[in-house]
Image (cartoon, rainbow, N blue to C red; front, side, top):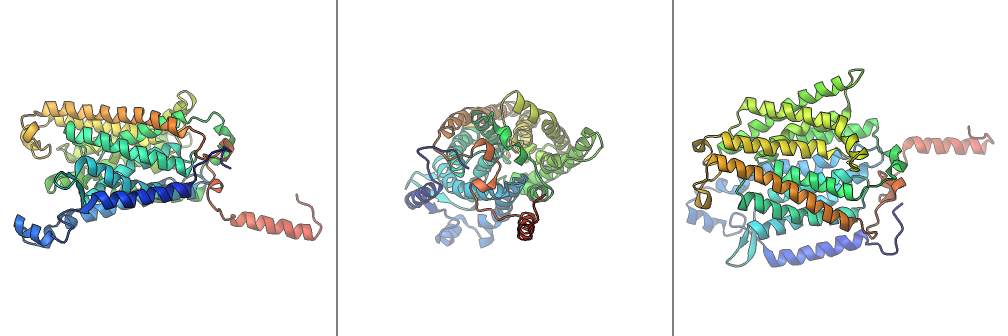
Length: 460
């Protein structure tokens, strides 16, 4: 059951009010860009574009499809590992992603795509990809709070998360002119520390009352592994989706592909070594195998070399697996951070590794090789690679700061007793917010007991 309070904000009210607000704001601000508008033919003539295949849709849509699947299927099913919270894992992921992409199109549009001539936001397929990226940071934050918050709290978390993301993204990418194609800093580091700080503020000292529901069962781990495989397969698209056309995008796919493969072997090795009987832990395989994709995000389009990508995946797999073994219990016991999904190990630490790798790679590169990648022109035309490395490092600190400070503020708001969050004894249980059908074995036991009662046989 949810906590009893005199005032409680309901989910239907939030959903209806928010969707009406979106309809109004989209009507005022959102328009098609020149490549999705009916004036595309005129735009083609003006720019001397020879064929419709030059439309950005044909370059970006395959990547958009992959990223979209990651957001709704990959993240959603990865959160179904809990034995009694599969509906909440995949269902609330669906809710806040659909909620967040609308707000993200507006927030990112106001910062990046506002046309000063008519004060409208012009959107195309790349905007849809960036909106999915923005929502990904909120889904990462959800992972720290999985099973412990209400759907209304998740929508508030997403509302402020998207807003903070748009601001820190603008600072890192536009003001600092740092590069972060796959979002190691902007998405993963920010989202992880945002969620971890919220979880710290919402610490539940009596969460042990629902300890029996915090584990997994065989079929829930299989469903979660489906999410892992979708994420693993499509992560090269995630890291390359908004990279520069041509060699940068091509390089991002190769680097991510190799880093992911390397982190899988490392995770399997460390997981087996860490167990006395040499068996594998499914928690490690579901999560730490993805660490290479997270860590390769910032440097994905850099000239890190193929063997460098393997090293990044190797190191991030080790760090992530050891995080699940040692840091997660330490953080809960000592730091009072209850991290449901272990996002500190999958997103925070590999995200920081990615930011550091990006800074080092930028600082050690030759300017001639990366002049196109970093767009050294206009205000940053005279920037050297050493200075660029410093700005890359500054971007990492900005992401961490926004996550920590923003998480503390939003956590304080979510702590108010008006959101209908579950009681300690009812955390990690779908029955609080969902109509849950009875299990077949429970139905069988109930029918068996009824038959015994009818025959006068007492229960054992």
